Image: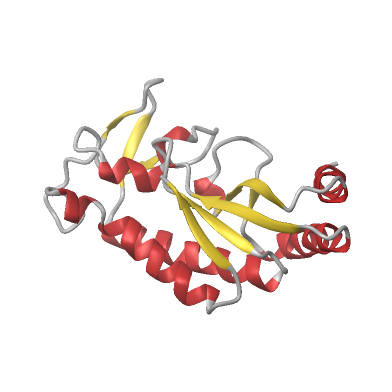
Length: 178
């Protein structure tokens, strides 16, 4: 099981193990059966952190939104601009309300992971997942405050980071993968 895998790593002397990948929402999932942030996930996350700590290790979780990389049946494929994924699926351009919800969901995810006993949260800003797709002028053709020059294309990532830091309130380390 996942818990046993991380327990064995910590028991074998690994100082920090990372739970990869935790989606901020069902829309943020990149593959079937991934863990995503919701109330019923809390007990399992807390159990995992407790098992790792009991072995003397520390645990981080990688938190993200897969965006156009995560094409699952019935899931909205969210991106910065309209288009098609590399496999041809339609990308739904994120509205500013969608982006506000994504930022809030990252904050809720960090808070839940901190409450569950995790030691660090890695924000997944890489691999063409939703945040990093905003950085790309090829994929981000927006003309609003989230598009155009790189400072504006990076706005979503900065907002997510600010929400994560606020939610962490010094309880967990925040890192980012870019």
